[in-house]
Image 1 (cartoon, helix red, strand yellow):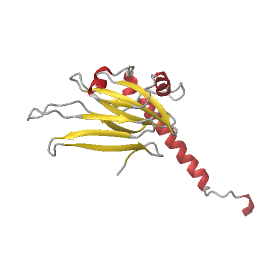
Image 2: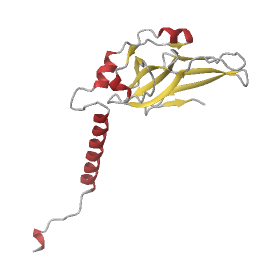
Image 3: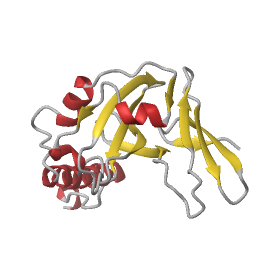
Image 4: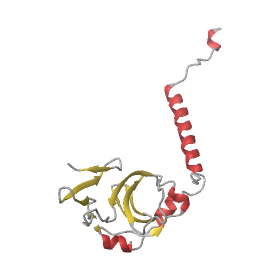
Length: 188
């Protein structure tokens, strides 16, 4: 009689598969609310593939930021995906891939005509993994001195960000690289 009973306990692999399915549906719904439909071609991939390629090395100085050569407008429906808040005219350009990481520079208007510059790393689905502030515009201080900021991205993806510290009157330099998880890691 007991041979006809079916074991009602769940296999751990079946349970994990159900959990993964629920997570995938939740992620798809979140993307749908942001205007991205997974059943369609990936609009973020299409946008990224359409971007001009910024050759390396690149030096992001005030002059570079005034011209933003070959940067293109980011469509409104992608600003939510990139978590851009408040920028009037966000612009983007891609960098050559680094160890499988897709990199994109995004310039965001600070409402006064000046742009800040961010470096984004994207995952396999072209969604942001990490972002790093590369450049912020010069701002006059109370003493009339200028805040100096610039960055350099070398051919081997060493990211050097330099800022002038008015308090110490020295240039502070931070160096980053792209880690295995496509995050930006600061060297010590």
